[in-house]
Image 1 (cartoon, one colour):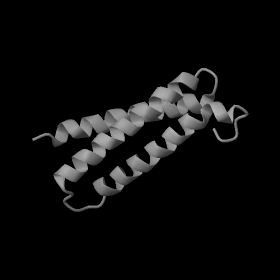
Image 2: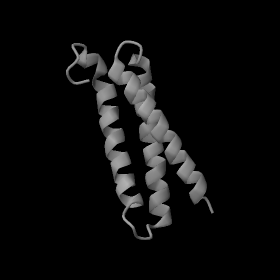
Image 3: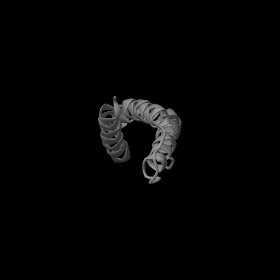
Image 4: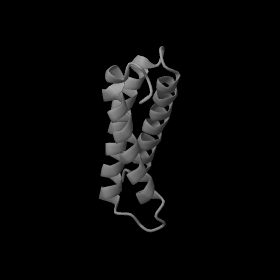
Length: 93
């Protein structure tokens, strides 16, 4: 997306994609650490990940018709958002 001519129009979407990637990466590290993660911390991290994915999806889906990378990003963030929400359901006491 950074290489697009309409970079200014996509700047907010790029920032949301980067935020999403960072938040989800942190959740992945907590989930795959191989130890008993704190339930509250994991829950909050997954909630933050779902929100970050949703925000990214909202903007990427608006540009998906015009940019293939936005379509791919929108699909990926939608799947990640669903995975976070599924894990949250499993973690509920």
